[in-house]
Amino acid sequence: MPKVLFPMNYRSIVEKYAKEYDLPESLVFAIINVESGFNKNALSQRGAKGLMQIMDTTGEWGADEVGIENFTPDMLFDPETNIHIGCWYIDNLIEQFDGELDTVLASYNAGSGNVSKWLDSEKHSYDGETLYYIPFEQTRNYVKKVNINRKIYKNIYGTEK
Image (spheres, rainbow, N blue to C red):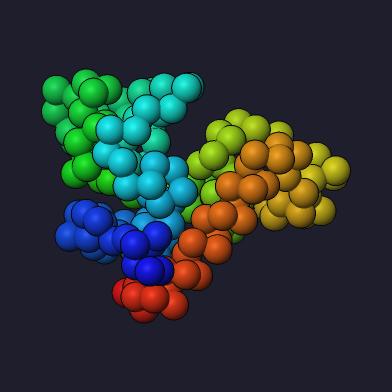
C-alpha cells in the first residue's frame, strides 16, 4: 500500500537530474508527489505546470540556463523537461539559501522574494539565514508535507544517492 501512495514514476528521469544537480532523489520524488501527485498534466489555478508545478517564467528562465532550445511553456507538461528544470531550480535555490532545506522548500512554494523578505524580518528569522516562522499557512504546510514525504520515500525505497 505505501508504494501506491508514494510511487516512483519517472524514476530514470529523476535519477538522471538528481545526479546532475547533486540532489537527493527522495527530495525530488517528495516534491513531485506533493506538487502534482505524479500527474504530468497538472495545471494549478495560478498556472504552474506539470509534475513539479513550474511557473512559465521560471520555466523560461530555467530553459535558458540549462540550454533547452525553442522552449515554450507547454513543454513544462513533458516529464523530462519539467524534472530537468525543476531540479535545476531546486539547485539554484539551495545555492541562494545556503542549503537550508526548509528555506529552499518555502521559496519553491512561496517564491524567493517572499522568503528573502521573511529572512530580513526578526519576526521570521533570528539570523537572516534560517526561517523559524513561515507566515503563510499554505507554505508552512507545504514544507511539512514535503519533509514527511521525503522521510517516507527514504524509509520505503532507501533513496539517498
